[in-house]
Length: 475
Image 1 (spheres, rainbow, N blue to C red):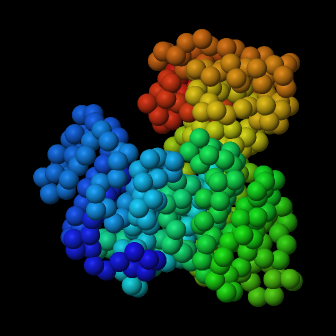
Image 2: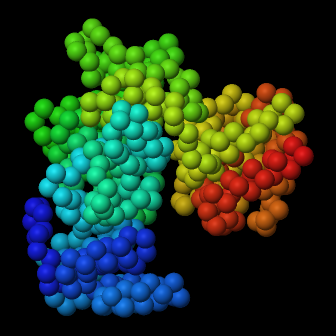
């Protein structure tokens, strides 16, 4: 099973690792192509049994409660992206010379010969927003497109479906990229790199290398963040990538762009990459005010989306129209209400320090609501960088002491309210305490820098609780 398309699946023994969101569709697709499919799954709970029964009714073999043993005769493993590379199943596959693909790799291999090219986006933060902006720009240019991938729309469904597309805007996680060795994008962007999921990848270098796979074999443009100070930088990843002849490195910056970059000049997003004579000319694309919300990190997202769209040949007017038409998902720097001259902003999606850093940079004077599950994060750099903007802080959730200690070290003069409760009423209390600390002109910002599962089902529910609490204040 080399890197070419596999055309004959009849009778091939394929093991699908993990039920879940990607495993069930992959098993169904492979079974439909005539493969002998066995699904292995670690868990054996009610949900898994329900999914197993559905697949067994089709004629798929399912093994629950043992995801570590390699089934006999396996010729290929298709894994759920979340399965860690150090699992015994993959060690056994390596020893037996059995290739391992993720669902993205499977989708890439199953594309029709004249399939739509992929404009691909990865990064620690901003992926979903950037891909949605990109799809909005492509639609404004009259192209048939969709925002797909890690965003919740299965790539398998898209490549095998009836609908015809001109080009796809594809969000890819580091997990998905790890298991997608033959993916070759038309153009791709790595938005940023910050420590995340290190428990899965094993090290920052391995995490960065998996993100960098998105650039392999790019045809037109490798889009990188020219402002990034992290090491390895996204520009380093471009340098290391093996790309097609003529593929260009295109930077985006919040400052004035150099040749082969997109950037910002006096409130205008400009392109000095995809223009005639880029050493002398620049093309106006849109105004900063066309981007919602116009926070610095979101302008960066817009520039990355614009670069990918321009790499596909989209006119400047479509960039402007697409950005104007775009509204971000809930819980991403969403303005909930103004109460007594104080703005209340829900950025519950800021589940790590890097996203929260971007959020805190968007406001001048902040009462910060933070805390939850830290997932191994440290908060010193975040707090030190934001200290001068903080009016106060209200801490919630299981790992709030880590943030409290960072505040004590780097912002000792900032008043801190430590809420020792995790019940459903805790968010209302947090918002009331924040109101007490805030002054007219301030922003009360929910940007937790932590995951939500200690108190809420997910970040959406956490954001909803915040918005509800703010509405009760207003009432």
